[in-house]
Amino acid sequence: MNRTAMGWAAAIFVGLLWGIPWIVGTPILEVMDPQVLVWARYTVAFMTLAIILKVGTATGKVEKKCEFKLNWANRHDIIWTAACGIIGQGAFSFFSFLSLDYITASENGVIQGLIPILILTVGFVRHGARFNTLQMVSALGAFVGVAILVMDPSSETNGFNIGHLICFASAASFATMAYARAELAQKYGSVATMFHQFVFASLGFGMYLVFTGADLSSALGIFSSPLRIACITILGVGISGISYLVYIYAMERVGVDGTGMALNLMPLSSFILAVFALGEAVTPMRLLAIMVVIGSMMMFMKVGNKKPDVEAETRNTKLKVQKA
View 1 (cartoon, rainbow, N blue to C red):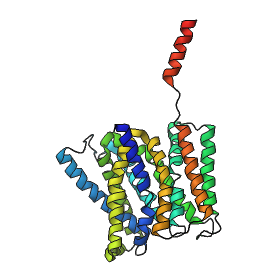
View 2 (cartoon, rainbow, N blue to C red):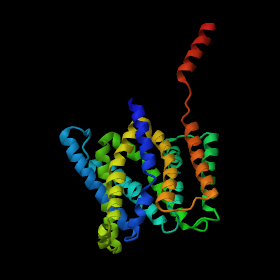
View 3 (tube, rainbow, N blue to C red):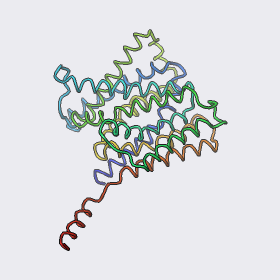
View 4 (cartoon, rainbow, N blue to C red):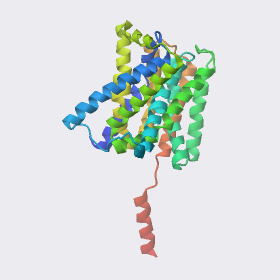
């Protein structure tokens, strides 16, 4: 298997895996607030990556690139790393868990599925990317799919509410930091990049908890049952720790946009697990919404990845010159 194929395999794995945090987090949210769960999640995650980074560097398995220095000269990278950690990781996770107070896990997963479109929207604003007509139609189709889901009369959430907006804010938080995350990974390496971001996420939310007077002792509720211990392990070690390394690995081989396309699998993964693990209802409108969203996003990415055949154009130009 070549590097590109391995990159696509990694991206697909992440797309499936990232559809389950909202399901895995549900049992833990029964004993603690979302902001406490976010702090616990990223504290476990950065400790996991600290071990991986230490062992990997010692054995030569982890690529060591530029050293991340905490000084004034490196303030630009420090600020972007902190933003990636606090906004792209912490706020993303916090808003997603918070939305579960108002919407179902499957609704959360479908809205999170808009991340690929939001990532390319950031590319449009920040990097001058351009959307063609089919992409704009596809993006509109994805939002129509979300509207169908929200307006399902048989939904447990009784239509549109603040939870849908909170969940959209979660997806936007992750998408706004995607390109910055990729640039930092190219400079410092994937493991070191995610480690630094998770440290900032843990510190940022730790300070927030102290400032708001949140009950940090509620984090001990994780140990109240084997199920919750398993859930925080999956969240902190698997999804937040190891999977982000796979995500960065995929970005380095198939790019930010290519990896974003594989995230189209998130709503499907969320829906299936929500039905089987949480017993959520399967309704015709919910199925239609998921098909519309996934189909629209796949079309969005497909037409956006079409590039002109430069070699063919060159050959045609040469033939015209020869004929002339």
